[in-house]
Length: 277
Length: 323
Image (tube, rainbow over all chains, first blue to last red; front, side, top):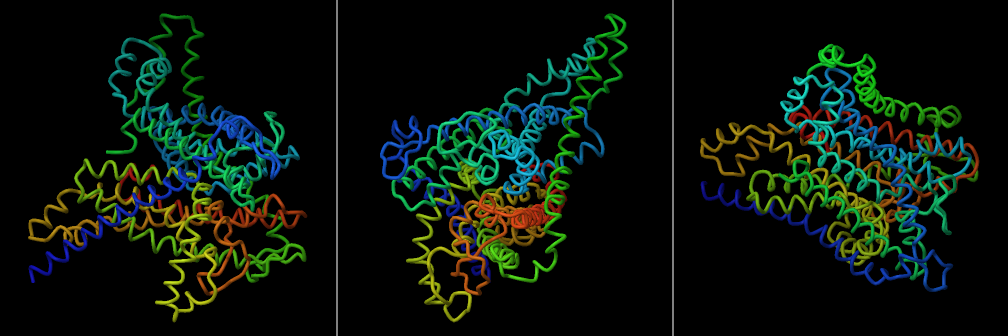
């Protein structure tokens, strides 16, 4: 009887090892294929040229790169200030129902499908403007970023020893100065991490861009007109029947995965409290 | 833990001109305002989506839930096939990712030495960061051919007596979409279950081991029962993610508005119809109908998320719920 129990124990633990191995191996397999198929596409043309019609060689995604950067910067300009302030509120000022509700619903907001947020931005920005635009995409991505920044900032600020702020307060400094000049600088790394994680989360987002940024085959930086974005190009070109375009899509996928991994790993290194224990 | 704002103002008011006293109400007030903005945003999402979908609710409303005929050209807007596709693909995802994710979480939290658990957890969390369009292109060009040439023929051969595995297989279809979704939600299940397991008190384990149990008996009889509602929460969160995934699914599911019993058949989901048809939709009713599907998706995911977060909070406290 004892032997059976121990045999079963060993068997199930091996199974658990296999589960974890499978999960990690899946990532390795995906990364392997993306590198294998995407690396040949990454050349000078890829980064410096705009898309060419099918059959014309030398096309690239320069317009999508600038478009992605523009949209992400817009989203960051909206989401980071609001998110950091709300995070500071939660960590230092918030008590009671408002704080609990903000915490709870910002967590819930991270679970809202990004495509639904895209429809929201479509309804509140694109419809009144009557055309697709880069700024509507910025709004959509800002909504997606916001909860990540709020919660990471809160965690970071909460980790700062309250005694140093109380020390500052005891010296007669105003409360807002104690927060902004004493506590927040101590939480700098964590706050930057929140911003990086927020950017990493939206950099690869394509669903909300479909009906906000829309995509644009030519070079454009006008915030009021449709704009290209890297995830959109990957989606459009991957679904196209042309080998050259599919090649560019793989290149775009590789660029996205590298960007997102670099941002994530930098964030973890800067602020180890978030993530791997 | 914090001193209130008003407690410090008199001190400064004595030494400085009155104007500086305004710093606290302005700055601290703006922090509070930002917190309110987060709540207002959630409310705005809800209200906007419901209002935008109202024309569809008014004209087609519940009748669209009774029909599977989706033919916008002749004003037929039956959404049943999207709901069916969403349920089937999410169910496949949970059936696959649930046990594997929980198994991996058990290993990382309870069995593996820390220096091994940390890098494996890093890999699994990086899997969560992979953009969905990258999963999509990988699913379309790598996973789908493998499904067509290896997995689906094998399933048909061994389990072909079940209606689920009958009929033609193309590699593109609900099963492939479900498998891809399983990979995408696996990190969610693993990360949250791991937090839940780590929140189980040590006494719970030690008591069980002291009774002479093996490690596995300890896990199944002392740890998992304690963590049960949190694990259900993790699975519900994963379900919410699977329901709302649009891009990767639309690239591998075949985008066919039909209800087929076979998992090999192409299908459509609520999220993928939005990704695929929204920008091409012409006519007010078509657009309103799609927005209606979007609102349904939003409300469904809100309900699931609220429910799941409450479950996770009940076990792991604030730590488990932050993801």
